[in-house]
Image (cartoon, rainbow over all chains, first blue to last red; front, side):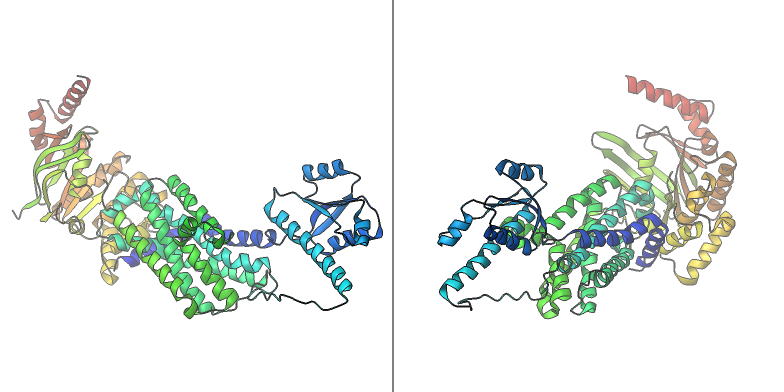
Length: 369
Length: 248
């Protein structure tokens, strides 16, 4: 391995001299974090809503206030009829509508079931789900109040007490930021090394390189080593911004996180290297990287829960290093767990790194055939 | 056998149905400046690449600097220097960084590396360019730097594939002075070219056409073998014959 040193030094100088790429590699985490952190809120609130109140009584106004008080509905306007209500929804100006019929106060007074209709624009999944849940909640609270008054008791016969462990405030940044560390590393690490070998091929330097006694392993490891540093800088950037801008906790052992992250970074770099041995031009390398990055974002559990996926896709997800690193990130940052809980993920990531480097070395040939 | 630097027997390389080099038998003595001459596509570059272990021969054997190219493609790389038409330099590294890298890759370390680099810098007159980026050098200086990198490990055999492409006449002349000096130190130099003045400076020439070695000997011998008054004449006769055969 004595030629690893010169190879590493060369790659490091080239990386340092390519200011634009270096800037992008440090800029991407900052930009992504701010976008994801500020823009993405999975708890939908203030859904634009219109009201059709056909009864216009104190009890109907009461009901509307109950909806508004949940904070999930923002009442934009009162409309006069069905057609107007549908028009608001169709235009997309309102995503929910509350309709209270004429006989609402009468049914309520008589003790028969009074109905409130809630129309939801379900073409947008997250807000429609939030509207449905909030609407059901409103009815339930009112039912409880009426029923307990009728039964003459003020305490409830049954109550479930939910304790959201590890993220008691159910804050979106606490989900997003740890995952984002993994996503950003995957994205940039695969892309930079996917370019690594094809760039030398395109510039004509590969021919000169493979006519020297450098071994394939020295070449591969020397290529990826400088980017390990870049990965660690990216991760630190995201963690610090997450901590001080979005107040994301760093509950567990940060040293352990860095140790496992090192393995994950090497695995991602090795994956890019493997891509590099499959393609012939830098353009192909770029396209191939994006082809591999997309499943990482969709199937790893970063955005969508893996438990909800069909078994086949859970399996595909299991073959992505990011899936396992996400468990590590959330485990250490939010849950504060240690090696005892995470050794399996560590072993899997080590396996990924070793196998991918071995595969790349095998595929790469020191000839021009 | 000890005076032989390169020996090939029935060396053949095919690319699919195309035979790029056919049944090449060649013996090159140590310290010789041997030129491979021929039009584009005649098989010069393929031959050199096989001799460097960059391409596996389809058939035949080649011994270079005492090493079997087919059996030990890794060992051969420690004993040869190679410079291609594109020089293969890192344009975003300086002259010094390029040399340092190749010296390191060839396994030179510590004071030995520094000493050898200083030696090569003096030999090729690179000392005033050390901190210039390789990408900003003129063709002639790129060529010298390419040669410097290929010479770091004192290879007994040096392969130069069209080393003077895109280099001005003055730099070409200086380059050939260097080649002659290297040969005087005992380095075997194998060079491809299609410049006649360069070909005539070689000790011996091999003339290639469509993968065949069709003439071998001193420049004047080669000229007579093909039936031309001089080398240039021979080369033109050859190229016309090629074109006729292709049309037929």
